Image (tube, rainbow, N blue to C red):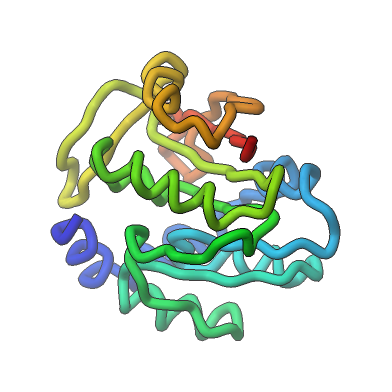
Length: 195
């Protein structure tokens, strides 16, 4: 994980510029349609703060965190809220959020750590709360371009979540990368619900 955080700290400005204007409206609406309004949302690994800002603009209560100190600074400035600098493993809230938005974020954890973090995410949700998360589509695990990735397919994720009794897969779908010139990259999107 440290090489991944180093990557984001060193490339924060470039990453911010490349993701801040990406249109994620459809994904966000898909997630929000399952939440009460007003709901409390955690943007878990918020990156540029793009989605935090969109949720705030729609009247939701939003807390945001990221493991990269540099991205926290940029996201705090952009969103107007204090983005917490913390690691996924440090999540300790209990029963606090209606929804957790983990867009292209927890995929940076190795599977062994991912299980523990997903249990923490489940604990942080209110009863019946939901998680949106996404993984690059495939079977690769390891370092790619300076960052660690755990890729998933429907089969590997179903197998993985078997051990996490607290969460159910409510919906999953595959999309192409929405960034310009990267449409050939596929993503597995998931909505998980706390039992």
